[in-house]
Image (cartoon, rainbow, N blue to C red; front, side, top):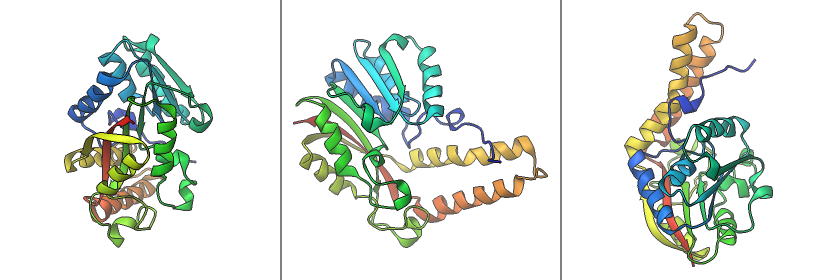
Length: 254
């Protein structure tokens, strides 16, 4: 039987290394330029989409994600908000349900949608994701694109707990160049700082501590939980911490 950990949304506002101040700055970029419908590709809990609708009530939002659990939590959050009538949420395959045209887009950590299965351990499909986003928007439309990068040249220790390959991600300058090549002008460039990463990883690690505090060290699954916690700690603190980064780009279609 799978071990049931507390849901991640109990500990994190965003399922990405992102602080509230940075989120507000990125959303202000979208709100200033978007008019009409904004799609959130792989929306997860729709935290950004919900904040955007609250920031600019004249917009409409569409969130699409394949995870029923994530969409379920997103629907609860939207229903409790003042902008529920502005947001539609769809639990479905993104590639099969993208609208033909929107007036803005959010795509955070979802580039793998346009790549090979994660299990194939291939480089991330940045170009395919950016091309798909560009196809949906007309010139002048804003796109918020966030994706994993290498903050510095990767080490063997950093890549080992990930896909095990040095070319899985791009460095930030290469991602910026790629965005221009795919038909976007890069207006804003951000990279998650170490505090944002530590908060994000701590939120993921906390599930083990919460489970152990509730069930106790004598539970039959306790040893498995402690082993998983140790593996995660090793992967992050002795592996990709400070090497794996997260870029957030404010783009305009050109």
